[in-house]
Length: 106
Ligand code: FES
Image (tube, rainbow, N blue to C red):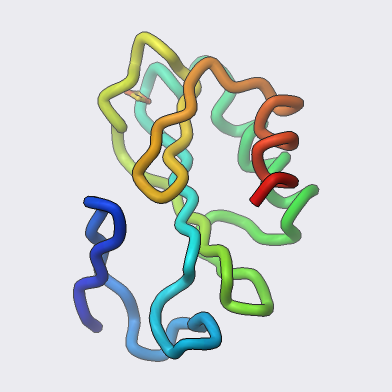
């Protein structure tokens, strides 16, 4: 287990976690907020969209090791719930359709 920081976002990473081609943690980290506001405004549907588009659930990494997804606590963007962070950039007021567009652009 070690600390991995990327674009100002730090997290603990298992040493045996699937990694990108360069041997580091995933290139892209998606964090779905599981805080109260986001939960009540549909964060669960965003997890479904993640699964549909990338084939992974929070806590998993794509087969190529490029994209990692996880649930996280409040991102501090409650007024834009539901919110997701992609490599530290907050995307708020998300609908499943908007998240799908974002994920397809990665
Ligand atoms: S509860 Fe999701 S950003 Fe605060």
